[in-house]
Amino acid sequence: MRHTTMLILPGLGDSGLSHWQTLWQLSTPGARRVEQLDWDHPVLPEWIDRLQDAVVEAPSPVVLVAHSLACVLVTHWARSGAAGRVAAAMLVAPADVESEARTPPHSWGFAPIPRDPLPFPTLVVASSDDSYVEIERAREFASSWRARLVEIGRAGHINGNSGLGAWPEGRRLLNEMLASPL
Image 1 (cartoon, rainbow, N blue to C red):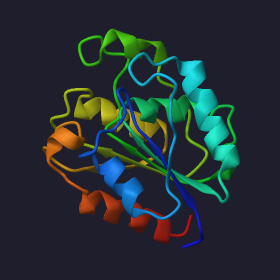
Image 2 (tube, one colour; image 1 turned 60 degrees about the horizontal axis):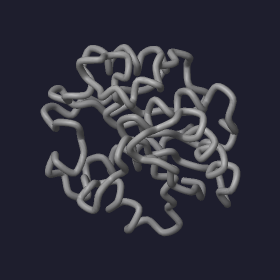
Image 3 (cartoon, rainbow, N blue to C red; image 1 turned 90 degrees about the vertical axis):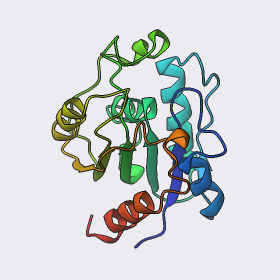
Image 4 (tube, rainbow, N blue to C red; image 1 turned 60 degrees about the vertical axis):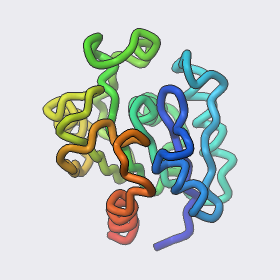
């Protein structure tokens, strides 16, 4: 596996201390969290700019590790950002910002969700009982993005409340993707 920089992309509200993203960041040398100006009232152009800056400033090709709303951020950013610097992306529990029943109003500014194929190897991980996206929609997203989909059963929103801790299964999935020919 070639050297890469892991960029952690939390969703709405950031990822707390018990979230696997935080635990991965703390246990991965060189990993960086893409900090947003306002985690609770996201503005898509601002979030895109912060992601672009982080990708361009990274010392090596990046692996994007996104959760929830940040999965949608990646799909918007990939249209015009420095996507050539991305070695791979892992999009976990993509939030369905097109569903008023599934997501809060302050995330709807990320709609519509781009359906363009992503220009880098992508893994989408989804749960069958995620309150922010129906599994059928996660399947549609993965298909349109030309991403590999892994359904992990009942794991809620695959966040700190899911009781996953450092989520070794997710880390295994990421490592497998990175070890395969890209």
